[in-house]
Amino acid sequence: MACLDTRFNEHKFELIDALDYPLEPVFKPHFAYAKSKAPTALNALAEKIASADGFIMLSPEYNHSMSPALANLLNHFGSSLFSYKPSAIVTYSAGQWGGMRAAVGMRTFLSELGCLPVSAMIHVPKAQEVFTEDGAPQTGEDQTSWCDYFSRTFTQLTWWAQATKTYSETINPHEMLKTFNATPAQRNAP
Image 1 (cartoon, rainbow, N blue to C red):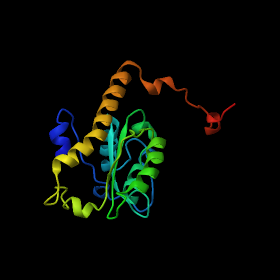
Image 2 (cartoon, helix red, strand yellow):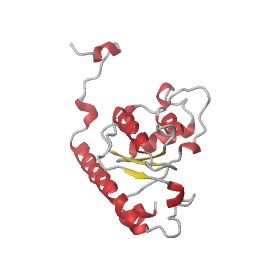
Image 3 (tube, rainbow, N blue to C red):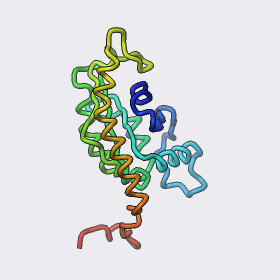
Image 4 (cartoon, helix red, strand yellow):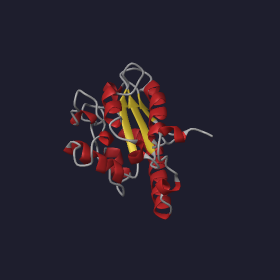
């Protein structure tokens, strides 16, 4: 967050931790509830997602995949909240690859949500040697070098976020799509 605060201070960033949302053991996504019946925490998060211009998705690598907590949280919301907004992928691991294998799966996942990832990604190998538990650089780590590395991704993200926001103010992309009216089969090609 320090890099974002110092180099991208004209933008507002909010950290949302998937572990702060203890979801029910029986899966029921936000969009499956009647409008007034969804849990308050899910409604509040849905509003944050809907109002965001872009997303930074941060995940450790678990068994070559993204965090189950992050996947579970994102699965609670429909693509209509994420669509037409860019995302950036940031991964880390205790090993040498920095979560790259998790990032590959995240590209597909985020694309299906409609928040297309920018091409530059951030991978932090041996994260425990680079950052402390609170995210500060370990003694001896060059914070400027890490911020330079992060800036490529964040510059792409902020550029695309501003571009999509500006264009969406001109043309609402959701109004361009024809919806199916009777059955999901109407989505199929002729």
